[in-house]
Image 1 (cartoon, helix red, strand yellow):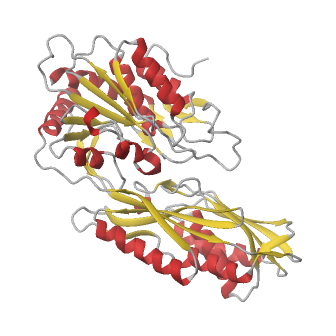
Image 2: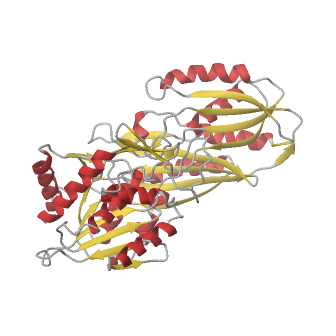
Image 3: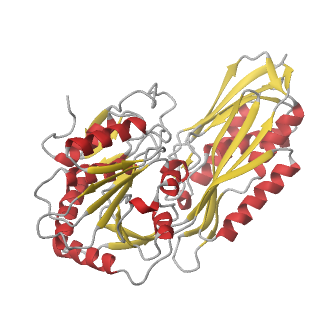
Length: 474
């Protein structure tokens, strides 16, 4: 039984998307769905080996001589869930519910980023009453993993010199520039030793989290960083211990909301950990007031060497974190930052995974070099990838001018222009075609990349209504 009103096409398509698992690198079934949609509607389409899909729809009668326009959204979603959730993102449909006009999933991400954009395009192509020029509807993969789909698509498929990116997250806002990014990974093989000590399990949780581009300047706690501070504090107090396990975060571009760690020691650390965390919690009383720590007993017949433990704790504790500098031009906009999004041990190897963001390549290089120095000092291996450039503000944009005028005409309010610290595929498409005129748009979703992600349903209806109107004005 549907949760959303099936008589509203954009709702129908969004709910359909939530029933198809489509995390990054798992978009094949959704690409199959898009291919079937194109065939059902007798539309030309292209699909590549990555599962990027482009669907072409001919212009409405009377619009044949108009310049084509490209609509674009990414298929993949961030797969994050509450620690208590049993949801399997590889196979399970999302469980939906509505609260006060907002759509939620059951303790998991919702995929509004960017299911909203995908649903808007499908609804537009399915509506014979919408008037429009030739449409080039581009559905990319692996955006959340590093914009890889956009970077791998054939530029000759795009066939348009103006574009509406539907990866917006606030109705009534349009983004005018975005940040470049890079992933950095530190790894280290670990040496096991026999354990004859007591084992304690530390858990940091209750954090708000958020997108590492949008929320990095809101001073929210990072669970991995907090765990590093706890572990370093124990060392500073002279408590000898061996690390047994550590895990935190789901995605490098999401501020982690939980972290767990097992340590082996003959010292009862319960009071020391709780008392230290109580003082640290005061730092977040206005930004992340629900954070807390648990200390429990555990069992393990092995641990990792003291040298490995020392190096791991220092790598987490000493690494730069969060916003490194703010824009000198735009108030409170981060200029460059980094987020330790994922920490885990698997097959006796530790992985630390950062998402770096910087407007300039030199800024990203600076942060990478800091991590490289840390890696060398503590005997880690470092790799990097996912490089993408930002999208610079274009003061001369006829498409943006027309878009904002149409929005004012329909809603009698001015559209807000914003710059984002997040990475957008717009920079890649602009790189393919420097003449590309780009505007961004979307409905409203909050707490994206977290298990509390939710989407405003009335804004999705309004977004569809506006796009239907705007395409007819071109």
